[in-house]
Image 1: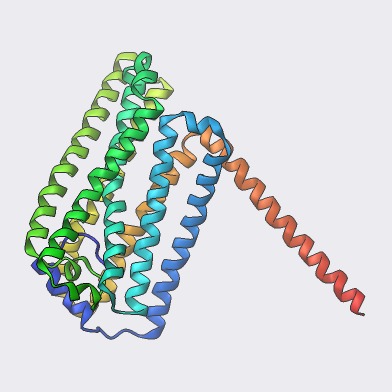
Image 2 (image 1 turned 45 degrees about the horizontal axis):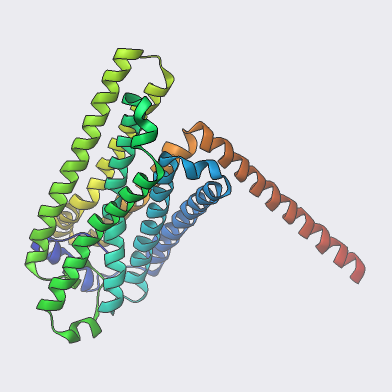
Length: 334
């Protein structure tokens, strides 16, 4: 299920998983039910946010909310893919390499998009605080859409090159075989691992420097103006939370090797280790995006809570109405 490039140590750990480690049915059922429930809760939250964004045109005119909703959609897609990959690994064990290729490439795209979107959102906050008079010129809708297109191109390039190298190195029959859906088993050439190490190191360093630079600049602006200025403090805290998000995102790049080392040390606990890392790296961080904007942003929170209240009241009303109809039908039968 790991979606990041793996080294030989990780490949050895993957073989432990693919050789069929024994696990009780109750354990499998519990793990998958928890994963599906978390996916369902987060999907409802993300869906309500997207619906709130779509219902109010004022969000279409603000680059901040456009990038935010891109983050929400990206997180929702990533969560769906990694949950599907996890469940598929239990249900089918092995699937066609061509189907696995589509799932893995999309999962890599969404995973690598998150840090770049975070960097873009941090730069937007920096411009709004440090260059307020030039904000409307520097952060307009066309430039925001252009930035999103650039992010897509940057993040789709590595998996496309992975596929091209595999097509050249592997026989055509390889994509018709069934494999355990894992990056190291799909893209097996060693050059892919080293290429992705260089790419990931470069672009994660760029994102980290962008977040550090914007945070320092906003801190300087806070000291120069007033430490009690609400907008500056909010921007500083937002960028700081983006930094926390980035650290959690970076776990996705380091965890495969760490997970492999633990599995090599404790092979009898390989499935439990895999499940814990699955929750810590791919599931729990998805709660941060709703917290940063859904709860902290006053304008979005106003419309979002209004929509949630309306949906809740509608659900209660329909439930009561359905119960009343059921009672009336029973009385008519009597």
